Image 1: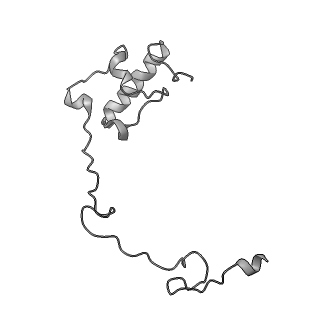
Image 2: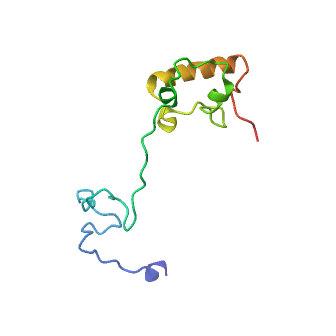
Length: 116
């Protein structure tokens, strides 16, 4: 009875293997050219290049006692936010992470976020 309900699928011109998936050797059609690339009818989201807050404000020393500044770079869960999200340059990110770790050790910043 189950076999009677199944429709017999005939392979189409794009699927020569007869299965549901196309053959692995087939190539996908080329992507549309231009700056808008992937989305049809809409503009691609423009992301501004992130600049280092410490370089812009000319902050050389990152003090572990400055909890208000350090808290901007710690997520709610207590993790240090990575460079690619904050836009901080590499040398400042290194100093920032050591300052956050020092502030955690003397209990100015929490190790973990609030349990809910």
